[in-house]
Image (cartoon, rainbow, N blue to C red; front, side, top):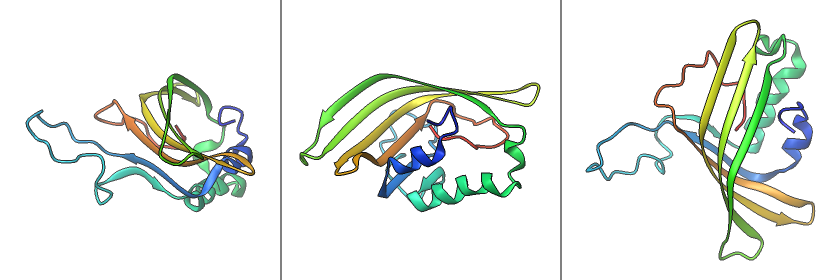
Amino acid sequence: MLDGERYDDWVAMLADDLHYHMPSIETRYRADKTDQIGDLNRAALYNDSREDIKKRLGRLATGTAWSEDPATRFTHLISNVEVELTSNDDEYRVYSAFLVYRSRNECDQDTLIGNRVDLWRRTPQGLKLARRLILLKQNLLMSKNLNMYL
């Protein structure tokens, strides 16, 4: 859906209580056991709700989203998918790996690689994404902007 710019369809799969989180992660020595992912007060590249995502995507309809004119070309590759039952019969924890390639203009190219931990919930409307934790493998994000969802 994202590669085809079917954003309304993608948003329809998001739960009302969505938490879409991509924390920045510091490089630390193994001896440092402090939580570098779970602290929501740390800086994050995304720390969004469903409404936050709708606002970001709503900019595309305004004609002022300069980073999307001309349109970005995306490819999302998702692999190593593992599904785990949770204590709630209607929820599933889903682990996956991703590679996202983005190309803009004549020579702007970005590749992002990482892992995701999702919580999917079965509802009368179908499966809904309730939580997404995105863990990038890059220490430094070299992209000019972050106009993509992973």
